[in-house]
Length: 286
Image (cartoon, rainbow, N blue to C red; front, side):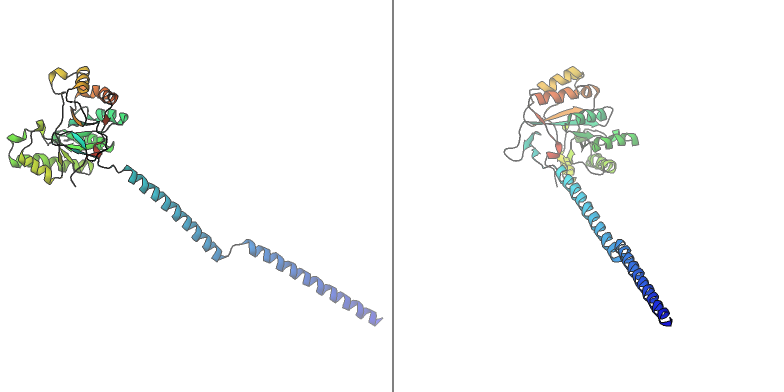
């Protein structure tokens, strides 16, 4: 009997030992699975590094796209101002049938309206400004708006005097003072100078050269003459002037009738086959 009891006890001990081993194996397998599901600290760092690299690549790509856009906006200089103030190609093969639009005595009352009209028509122009139209912050803001629309700003002296009757000191002040003011407002100095009445002196030519400004007069203009002070008359003469031709440098002013006729003038020139020149394509002094 005693042997039977001992035998049964040994069987129970073996059974219990087998159960414990099975539980331990199960726990190890379950723990192993959980460990695989959780990324290690080193893997987290690697993922972080990959995400950072991908972000840098994306940012670099965006930067390259921006740089490409900036490069595309750079305009090549294809024309120059000739001795008779017309605009001529620098190299053969460049379109000769172009005209340049210029607006003097800005920004008085209609310059911003004229700029908006030209912007809608995708037509370039140079606005030659006077300092006495920039006396207030509001007037300066108008000039900034015109410049921000992409139009070039030229120097037409501070107070529009007849320069041959001015002393050298006065001539210098008229030009330099306005250049300083324009730079203050738009952040750059003018690249073109037009004397009032087209009356330059040897000294103003010298000052303009020192200031790296191209001298510019015009081929024709009429809107200051009394007989052309209406929309219909100024349109007709600007489109049918005997001086209209390849490279014509068209002079207009900040005037009500010119502003009213500007769209028809641009449209009429294009209908005659003329390209409205982008002034950024004109050679400047470096």
